[in-house]
Structures are given as structure tokens and as C-alpha cells.
Length: 141
Image (cartoon, rainbow, N blue to C red):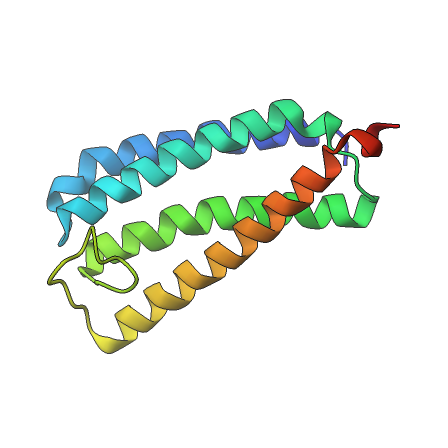
């Protein structure tokens, strides 16, 4: 996967831009506080991808694991922004007691947001552990 670091940085800037646009729209969402969270998720996950793209050449993992990690990182960053945005639009309170007190969406909306947040949580932790493993001192030697 040549130029993977550059692609990660491109996705980082794109997600950063999505986060900025989400900030412009947050006032029209059912849950404005969750809209702010969606804006911040886009911006912060974009910055994360930019940083990871800068470090990607130093991540030493077997090729198949590195490819899986790449796609897992992209999945978790984009889906985190998307699910948070959907939660803001739907006005759901699933897994968000701080940003959605008193909010309750339709059952299918709550389920969708819950599954989305849970999948993102699992995948981002797993991919972060893999990146950390690939950056360990012994991996470079």
C-alpha cells in the first residue's frame, strides 16, 4: 500500500472539513449538544488521521495486519462522526447521558445509534492497540 500515509492525511483533512460543516449545521439538529459533539468528533478524528498519517511509515506490522489496521482506523473515525451526527439529528439518548439528557429517539433509532457507537468503540480500541504495537521499539529493529 504505497502512499498510505498520504491517503490517511487526505482522509484526515476531509473528515476535518466534514466536522467544520457539521458545526455550521448543529443549530438545526434535534439535539444541539449532540450536534456540537458531532462537530468535535469530525474535527478531532480528522486531526487524529493527520497525525497517524504522519507516523504511519513508522508503524511496523505484517502487511495484512497493517492493511486491516488502516481500514479499521478509517471505519472507526468516519463512523464515529456519522453515528454522532445521526444521534444529533434523531435526538437519541443512546449511550450519551451527558450530551443527551432527556432525549429519546424511536426504538430503531436508539438501536442503530447504540450498535454504531459500540462498533466504533471496539474497532477504535483494537486499531489503536495495533498501531501502538507497530510503534513499539522492538518492531523497528
